[in-house]
Length: 233
Ligand code: ADP
Ligand code: MG
Image 1 (cartoon, rainbow, N blue to C red):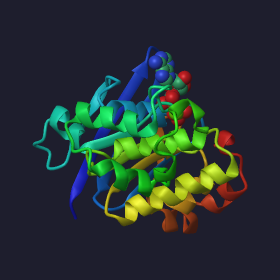
Image 2: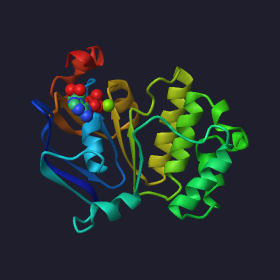
Image 3: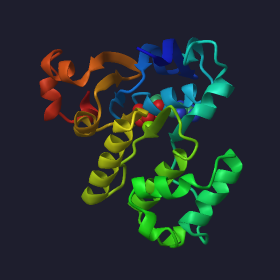
């Protein structure tokens, strides 16, 4: 097994609030991981810490073999943690050419990535004309341009209609099948069940469970979650 990320006793406090509490988990290459929990359970904070945009209070994390600096490691990470943001009056292809320049990767990858997310036939449309689902798919294509080891997505289907949700989930599965490791945060049990092989379940910043999705359903009484409102966790 090749380790992509190790998180050790991570804690994050915002003043008196402990957003993430003594959290440990490991991410191995080739799997699809979900961080599952209701709103406010610490999912985005955890992703922010490992992506170096949020400072941790205590604990530690290390990328890959443990000898790679976070700065170096993040060059091999693709992440979408905000709403997709591109130049509205530029086309999809113009936007991605710009990303290629910034990331110093060949423009020849653009077609492959746009085909993967089903946007090649809309490559010449301006970004502002895209639906939210298409914008999210373009963000995924963009995040894949440097062919990252791992793709990190925060609530990738939030705000999308059922068709948009289905498309994004199918794309995530396709990317995983190509060998890219995935880590996604979601408040939807359904999403984790459909897309993920492994899960870390959080409640108020604390880990309730981590392991295969199959065993999550078989043990821990998580059957109840199927119908329970995640907000009540
Ligand atoms: P999730 O992504 O699971 O919805 P978050 O990680 O965004 O949860 O938030 C966890 C907790 O930390 C919440 O109570 C939230 O209000 C709080 N929080 C997040 N970011 C900040 C911040 N910058 N300042 C203060 N509190 C924050
Ligand atoms: Mg969040």
